[in-house]
Image (cartoon, rainbow, N blue to C red; front, top):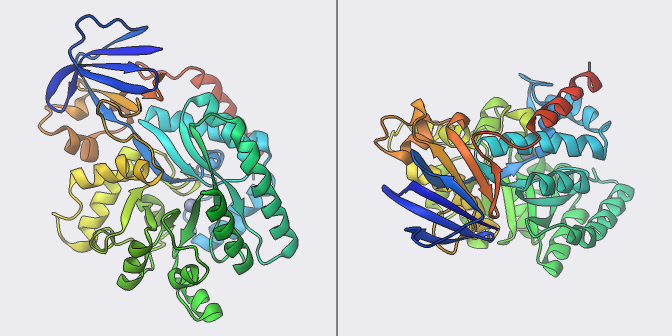
Length: 416
Ligand SMILES: [Zn+2]
């Protein structure tokens, strides 16, 4: 399978891009090249796709279900009671809805944490995206639940091998306030033994820090370090209530921080200090979090939020300039997961999008990256390719009408 994109804009030049299998094999002139599919790139620019660094895809079924409440009320009274009733089939359809929205807004990879691994994995396979999917841990200190979580992770390690290499398996201990010390320690050991990534929430609220100090006499970052979890395979979402020395410790250990500006603002969790984190040497990528706390999955909106929030918070309009935040929304998460994507070059994975330069939001076109950060929305994305396969063309994704119709059934199912 090969694709030739003719006359497309790439870094201010008009070129032809030849995709062979799942790789961008040539950028230049198409003379003499034949391909299975030809795409007219006139008035379009080729860009890397977004990589959504923190997500709970299936939560698309909860979009606008519970809003305008405090985090722990939101979790205890709305989200967790509803989640207790969902099935693997619900997760499958919820994830398909999320994938559809991500594809339509130019995202091809997401780092996920949710129950029912197979429901999510099936949806990702069918939609053609990439994802890091995990075995979730929430034992609430209960030995029985801990054993079940452990057995599930062990089984999923094997079962996950049935899927394509677009899906990677990881562990997902939810947070220090829902996962016991024993389970966290087990996760660190098991991940080390099997070279797995670990995805968690860290220092999202002040209450989490206060409770950790009370219970363990340490702040959450120090606590995770004492259990051996601070390592290059750890991706940690939010990282809001962390001091400079904690940032430095995380950077020294190679931990990756996942910034979710919209979710943080909406739940008033606090402010992630992007510039300070970068100055401390911490690698940062941007994620949407789940649709229940965002409520959309549009990464172009998310990177704009990140840039504006940093400028507003620091009082410095030079903070987090467009190229930096663009990198954090594209290449950064790819690097965290060892993916050769998030950039356009010969030899890179063919994970790319074509944006419509005739879209009013991209005119007159002084600076495409600035346009993508501050002006664009999903309507600018015309074509999305992942792993050398076309997932969307002319803004149409195969089967989208059925996915939305299925998604609307959640309204009746979860009526309050
Ligand atoms: Zn989250």
